[in-house]
Image 1 (cartoon, rainbow over the protein chains, first blue to last red):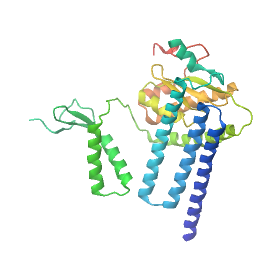
Image 2 (image 1 turned 90 degrees about the vertical axis):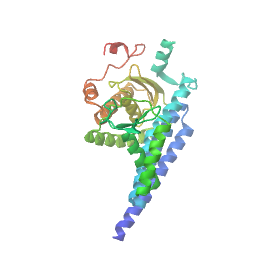
Image 3 (image 1 turned 45 degrees about the vertical axis):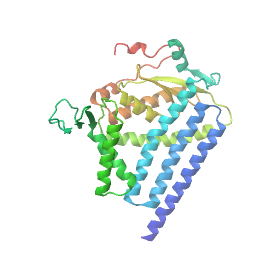
Length: 117
Length: 214
C-alpha cells in the first residue's frame, strides 16, 4: 500500500517539475519573441498548460476532497480569465498602434478598420 | 400588501429559475447564479457545513442585489457528451499548441505573423464568447478583436508564411466553434453549425457581405 502512495507522490513531483519547466519556457518566449502579439502567445499557452500540470501535481500530493475542489476551481477560473486578459492586452495594443504593421505578413483587421473610418 | 420575495409560480412574468425581491425598486435575481456563487464560497472555505452554506447564500444574495447584472438571454444548454468531447479536444490542443509555441520560440529564423479574419456561423453572444475563449487555447490562435455584428473573430497567427498554416488555423477555429456549440448551444445553433463554414474572406472583401440576408 505504501509503495502505491510513493508512486503517486513521485508522479505528483514529476508533474510539478514538468509544469514549472513549461512555465519557464513561456517566460523565455516572452523574452525572445519580437512584438506584443507574439509575446501574448508565449504568455498564455505554455502558461496555462504548465499551470494545469502544476495543479495536477499538487492534487496528486494533497489527495483530499475539498482541496481537490479548490484546485479545480483555480484551474477553471484561470482557463476562463486568461484568454480574456490576453485578448484585452492584444486589443489595446492593436488599437493604440503598438503593432509594427511591417512585421505582419498581412492584416485583415486593418483593412476592415480603415474601411469603416 | 406586497410580498418580500415572489417566486415564478406566483408571477408568470418572471423568467424561469428566478425570484423577485420586493421593495420600492424590485430586483430580479437568478437562482442558479445564487447556487453557483454559494458553491464557490463553500469551495473557498474548504469545508462543507451548514454555517458555510448559510453565509454563502447570504453573501451571494447580497452580491446579486448590490451588483445587478444586465438581463441576457443566455440560451445555455448543457450536452454532457459534447462537453466531454470539448474538454478532450481542448486538453489535446493545449498540448499541441504548447509544443508548437515552444518550437517557434527556439526557431532561429524570424517567423512572419499575420492577423486573419474568421467568420463564424453561430450568432448568439454566449456562443461567440465561449468560442473566443476556446480558440485562445488552440494552436496558433490569439484573439485580437471580435466583431459582434458579423460574428467575426480576428486571430493572430504565428508562422503565417505558408498558406497551409493559415488554412489550418481557420479550420481549427471552425472546429472549436462546432465543438463549443455542440457542448453548450441550443438546437437552433447546432443546426446552424452543422452546415458548411462560411467562405473565407479574401483580401479586400468584407466577410459580412454574403451574410446580410441571414
